[in-house]
Image (cartoon, rainbow, N blue to C red):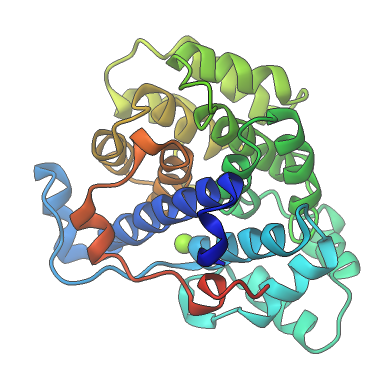
Length: 302
Ligand SMILES: [Mg+2]
């Protein structure tokens, strides 16, 4: 796949976004290790190399399916999620079980619909993996939200989870606009215009009204920061944070990580949204210390 990325700007942008997502995910997840807590306050990097988690593994499948099909093919996406599922990457229990059942021949349509007593999952898992898709569709944010919606259903059928994925895809598309980056207000206004009525949309409007707050902890206390791992408790804060630091990965990471909550997923979303635009790339050292992307996505196999 990387051989083609030079000739396909969509793929190049999506790979940049995926790398940024993986850095946010891998570095963010370091702060679940208690010995690293004090480093967060000092904005100091944890030692060693940083392994990414489920956020990156699933995002790699989204990108691989896009590269192979030039759109989201739900069956191919379900197969890729199941085939590449590594139990030790920090998936939630419901997804672990579902991906195992798909590998054993189960139908993702039935399995995803049956989750949580038939309500479907409203977790942030469809949003955490979708920024590279937004970067792919940087010239067409509407198509980004449409394809994100289709991609969400494979695992997350609750309306809020779907809206969360649409919002992150829209943000990543707008942030990577080939015509240049939007203002913070422009980014959130653009996202709000593309996300139908929902708790996620209500949270985004509140986030828009708090763009001039300088204290991420206060904003996280109002919007949520993934402590309940729901889409509506995760996406508004992550996009508030991304909007305020477009073009500055380091600043965005620390502002996002310092509030706690679902740190790896919050930082995966922010990292993926920023890095789809060249100016939002992670620092070189951070990229070098992050585990490389899975070999199968680099080789272009869905
Ligand atoms: Mg994770």
